Amino acid sequence: MESIDKTIYVTQPALPDLDEFIPYLRKIWQSKRLTNNSLFHQQLEQELADFLGVKYVALFANGTLALLTALQVLRITGEVITTPYSFVATTNSLWWNNLKPVFVDVDPVFGNLDPKRIAEAITPQTTAILPVHVYGNPCQVELIQEIADVYGLKVIYDAAHAFGNNYKGQSIMNWGDLSTLSFHATKPYNTMEGGAIICHDEKTKKRIDYLKNFGFADEVTVMAPGINCKMNEMQAALGLLQLKYHQKNIEKRQIIADIYRNELKDISGIDLLAHSNDLENYNNSYFPVFVNEKVYGKSRDDLYFFLKENGILARRYFYPLISDFPSYRGMESAKSDNLPNAIKMANEVICLPIYPDLDNNQIEKIIDLI
Ligand SMILES: *Cc1c(COP(=O)(O)O)cnc(C)c1O
Image 1: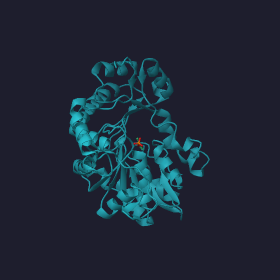
Image 2: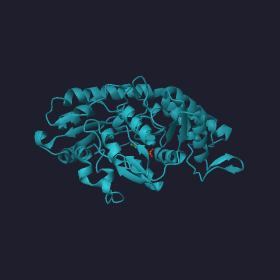
Image 3: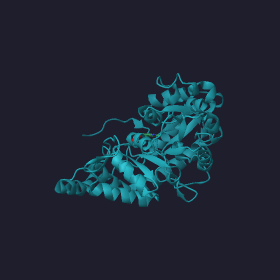
Image 4: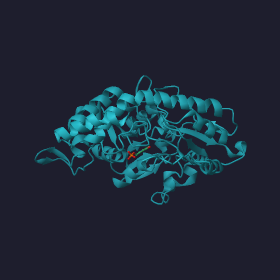
């Protein structure tokens, strides 16, 4: 089937050569072991732990189920402090656990949960903090941990954007009690759909493995009302193959990001995302720019629709804010005077296309249009 769709999407999944995938499939067919912690699943958990530099990786069918389960593993109750500036799955995972999200504003530079605002939002019902490393920039993990230690809170990082990113010489996912990942097709590392929880000790890894498999601790023991969100062998096999090409894909993304940065930096009214000095191995999972309407002369939405008319489907990540969706907008913490920085970012941001196969002509076209 030839593709005739000339639209340039915000991302396009990196895929290895199909011929290289066939031997993996053959192995699955021969073994007749399709899921339930089989060989590729075990191998991928080990290879990812080594690659990322973390102790334990528990694989999931997708990133949202990893978030849902992470909250169950730590038996989080009551209220959870979180950010409105994220993909909606972050807050939805709280809703599905019957937890009350409490929105706190983000810092104006990186768009990450502002530690200075967290303490003000704590009540006797607060049990956890759920921050997001937005666009892969690390949250202020030391300050967040200090607050968590003082108030006795758990910290779960939604690290969906931070696959492979290091902070001060080690994986950003070594911070917090748990971190979750997404391997969705739109992410820099994909298994079509997929996800993971990162944890730091064997006992927690075991509890995660029970919970993602109905709660079975052994043949006759169900330790809790678990769920089924296991990654299957086809996803795990693809993950193993994808990992071989990941570094090359990241290098291609870096080249594209460098071109964008060079050519957009002098356009007044188009502001680029800052990068934390402590960030290493940056994956360039997104390329957000911020449109300052007064200076640029056109609004973010003007630019968005103009690009769209010209076949470029950039995305307004993250707009609307999660706190503006019907399920959450009535909450006290969703009020606009509580979230000025998040509102400003949501109104100015546009994520430009970035993926390994984006070619120079396409990049030039996008830059010319801007
Ligand atoms: C992609 C993403 C998710 C959801 O992951 P899925 O694998 O699509 O379920 C959660 N949080 C953030 C911040 C994301 O970007």
